[in-house]
Length: 137
Image (cartoon, rainbow, N blue to C red; front, side):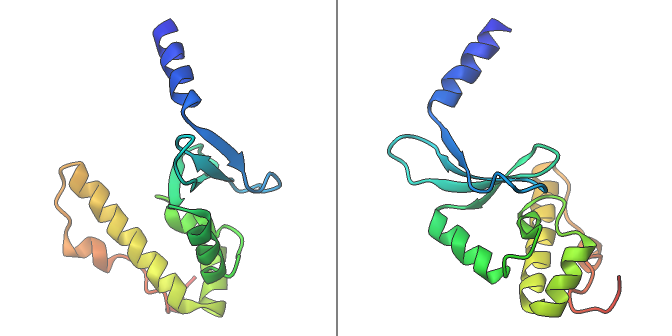
């Protein structure tokens, strides 16, 4: 255990993170500096405490924020879980094009995880993704 603790401390020394919104109740968005000389990245931690990469710099994050209209929970488009039904409804109402892009990216990332695990993707998996413009839910 001491070796693990020492390794964790050494790893943390190379990183600096700043919470962008400490009032957020649905996750944590941080500006992460991988080293003292690197440009900061934006990462999202969901309620399950998993970290997900959002953007390579703050300017890209801000652009994504604008494209997602700042809707609550929009960061979940970059997680394994994806957007919840309420957020999807808001996207259908306000910007169905962005929802379509996010749903396609979620399906693609799911296929990549399956390939990484050694499973070949089937065409059925892509067809199972609900139509972003549909009227269901």
